[in-house]
Length: 488
Ligand code: PHE
Image (cartoon, rainbow, N blue to C red; front, top):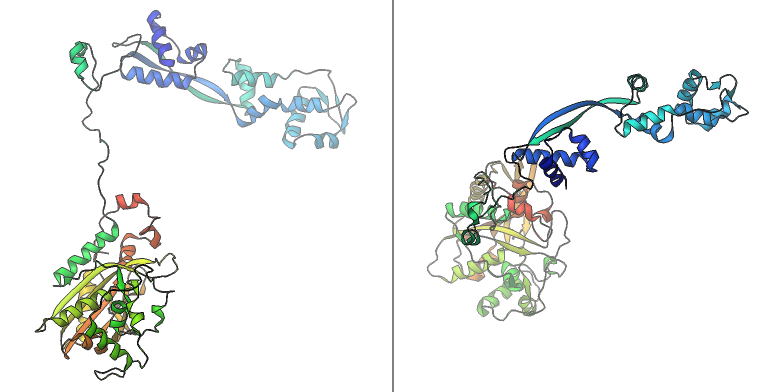
């Protein structure tokens, strides 16, 4: 609307002398006129010259008087023809209106000021309010009145900015829309000759490229995989989230009454609720070691139940995978030493909070060779953890049904200034290894930790639900950098 008005006006007039007056005459907001002038000037449809004027605007106080009337008039009107006591009048008026009103009305000789206040004139005009209203409407008032209002801090100067406008070199009564593309139709019709093309912007960024983004957990997982591979470890197949209780617990010499085997801690499957196949002779040896021991062990001395071992579950640790691999390794003759690792998902029936989820990832490493000792385990742990930036380690004796000795691993966290638990480790028990058929002098050292813990530390995330699960912010996944392990 403003654009048509300006270009149309210039068709029959040499200039618009004042954009402010132009806006007022055409009933268009001046800001809108200014924006259009700037744009038309940019495309050289018009030439615009700045004009500045000193004008006056109302202060906050001035605005209230323009609405409610000046304090002196408010005061005058509050004085009844028979007069009023000072106290009574004060009660009826706002304190500042009373104070300013009495001073001004006294000065104007409108009221008699004593103990009793009474009118000296019949009628007063609110000149102050009238002048403030005129200023508000952009009209002019004379210099003396300006001075008076300024002295009472009811108005303040402001620079008004506008333009005077003439036709520019590209003037046309209507703006031509620059074409962005040369089309087949333009060529067929021949109108390409007259078309004005929009200039090509070589520095435009273009839309962001769509593509896949790697989740922080997967970035950290890849780095950990590389570390294991550098250290000569082979990756174990972890493609079975569903596992039998046998491989998850029994084969690990975990008794059938162990609290972890309760449905409060473990997700059991309804369909299929049991496993179809287990290696029978090995099952027999596992049963025997639970019930009565052997291999210099006394066992647990309870009646081991096959039904319990058959129950399907979502694996609670990747040690189930390690167990399967060690069993396979035990079947190979002659024995071959191995270094294995895995990083994959495990499931626990736990209450979800800022550090726990019902599913998370475990990192697990193991070395299987003749004559390994606890010293080898400590050495491997130092080697492994120093590669992920944790070189200060401490160990605390712990308990796992399947390892002896067992050690919790702590690392000194420079940022937190304290020792934090980072993992669990141990040497697999003979009650676990010998029934598999591994040679007697073969020892297995192993450790496990979560993938979420180091990832949260690296990415500075303190609520696990921001990292993993349905509440994750996709923006975070798209924008997160690669955080290098070991550099922190
Ligand atoms: N399976 C243990 C856990 O779930 C970790 C572990 C792995 C402990 C290997 C000892 C040896 O916490």
